[in-house]
Amino acid sequence: MAPGTAWQPHAATASQSPGWRPVSDSPHAGTALPDPTAPDAFAPGDHGFIALCRAYRASGGIARGVDLAHWMAGRGQGNSLHLAALIVSRDAFSFQWCGTFWVPMFQFSPLQPAWGDGARQVLGELGPVLDGWSLAVWFASANSWLSGRRPLDLLATNLPLVLAAARADRYVIKG
Image 1 (cartoon, rainbow, N blue to C red):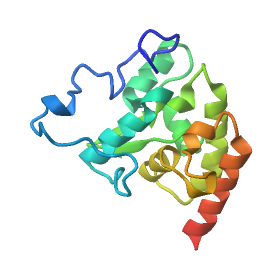
Image 2 (image 1 turned 60 degrees about the vertical axis):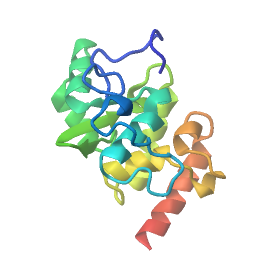
Image 3 (image 1 turned 180 degrees about the vertical axis):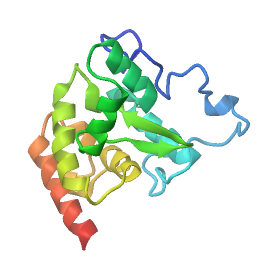
């Protein structure tokens, strides 16, 4: 979500944090950013995390779980226990990177509430067979059942198609 829009989390997301340095300022200056269309673009690790940050930027980014819990508390929408309960009950998902839990913010967007509702339905399909990182990658990756489009891009406009893709992928994953 662009700065200055109606919804911003109280705490900085990974792509907004003052401590988050662009790759060009990092010790690995000159290292190319991962291509989000490459087969291993979202592989667990630093480059995969950067690719996920880029992939989720337009849908609200990703936030540290602790920051999201503070944001929720500030709005009277729960606290860290409530957020943990959402994740455990598969009403939301998070993934771990560098010892921190990160949450794709599209699940909590008041500007596009269908994203959150749709995400919960998709989690019902894929939550039992994919871990948090794999779920983050699934939403952000081109999907052959969706003619190469990303589930995240169709979640609010064509939920039945995204759910069908999730069911098909669940079937393929389970074997």
